[in-house]
Length: 223
Image (cartoon, rainbow, N blue to C red; front, side, top):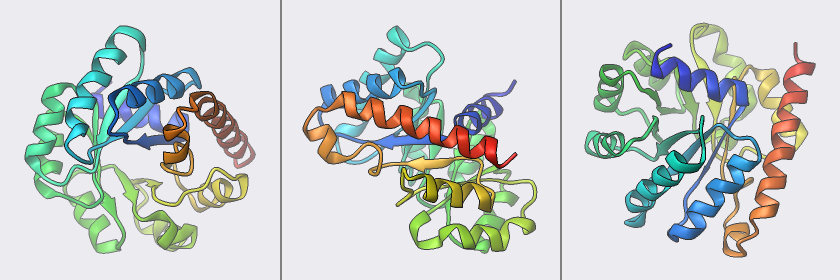
């Protein structure tokens, strides 16, 4: 199986992609451990601020020694140089807030999943024409499930994942899956700044387990 398809399959099976960033290396590592203990097999670490790249390399070291089967990707990739740096360090997949053509071409060349952020049909068409299969709908809370319901039939060969404002409630998750998403990106509603500040890794683990169970139930109900 190709690296791209492996990453897609893992995220789709999981039904969500947790994403977070913390400037503190130890907090970043312990949050990663909490998510992994909860059963997560794909995580996005967000490229924000000067500490991000250094922390990411540490996370990869921890992943390689403690967390078999975990895919660790990087988000907020806005240019080709960032993509190259993180892939050279060991990133398993790339995520952007927008569509970056050069990153798309690089990802195809390297056989890596690249999930570009799109919020218009024009952006989705550009991403599809560049060979992308997996689209991040961003910002999800501004677009809403109705947006996807309205355009999904135009893009039968694409997978969609909303990110930004997606809530952990059953109602919110169910609304998105009914509209046709394959997964949901879960940021601050799941891994909040407050929980990380309080170093409350037990709550992050518990909430992640509960959210995974909610998604599993919603997907089974929709079959």
